[in-house]
Image (cartoon, rainbow, N blue to C red; front, side, top):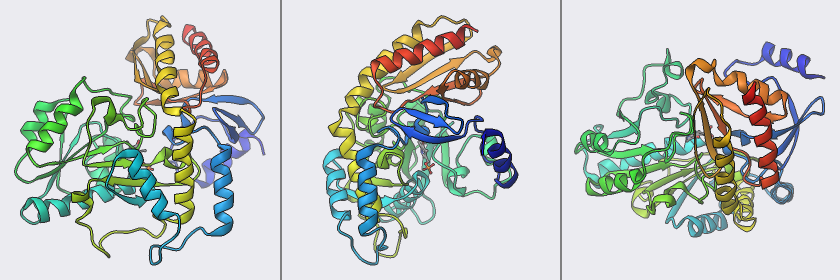
Length: 399
Ligand SMILES: *Cc1c(COP(=O)(O)O)cnc(C)c1O
């Protein structure tokens, strides 16, 4: 079946929760993907940073095949021989003390919320049911009802109530606002080191460092949602390293499996995850041997192939090239590592238009919040490939 038939089938039978570009992909390799007509594109979205290791990485693929022949799921009623290695390797790599494995990013966020509330009552001594969690305006942490409860995106919230109480939202990048919002009932502050879905919003230098100080001073758990910024995307394994800090809970997902399988995790110091006892949280698929084997290899690929260093150097090169494109419609180009946002002035007519044109020219990316394009190619991208992308982007922006 060809593109148009597949699109009409999809639109007829599927719920319309996305507004995808009209390209039907059927194959991927490294930074490249192919559509059903055989046309080749550079993927500059990487499934929202879930395929940092590149599409269908052969080493991760091999583990997927081999592990799936041996054992895929035991549930946590029994132990499996991959879990301990996954924990140990992940903790060594991220200097964490404990891991709680889940599947999707939203589940990791929900897990963190449950955990810090319990920590608040049992360790901090917050009166029962009074725990508050502070989040930031324009956050994106997922799509469940509780997470939707503290979204500031009206479209994401409208008519989904009643919502989960216990959240307070403050401006992103504003440490005074954080200090003022904290009360004796504040259990945690949850923040993305760089706001991805909001359009690659980078906070002022020193923000996370100051946030760390404020949280420590007030005995508030600092939760960093690194589901998008983590695992090499910004040129460090975790974005917190840019400011030399450590969170209390770090959430990772997306590239933790190199795009092969949903794997997420909550990383923590002992005190926080230590409040959970048997029967209080879990997931049938969380920590399954297939997920663990895939994640172990996905992490190994990230380290052994130098993808984090590559993200730093190629990101800087890409950013510099994008900034050299002179187009009066472009308001700002910003980024860290290979997490780059290009923002148009409102009068440019919306970023979608440009995404459509880039697609026609063989480069896939996606608008976020009307006026911003996010460029986040797989971390395996080379200098020549960035030059190729820059040429296409500058041609399209000339039009
Ligand atoms: C994608 C994302 C999530 C949600 O992850 P899912 O796997 O889609 O549930 C949460 N937080 C951030 C920062 C994300 O980018």
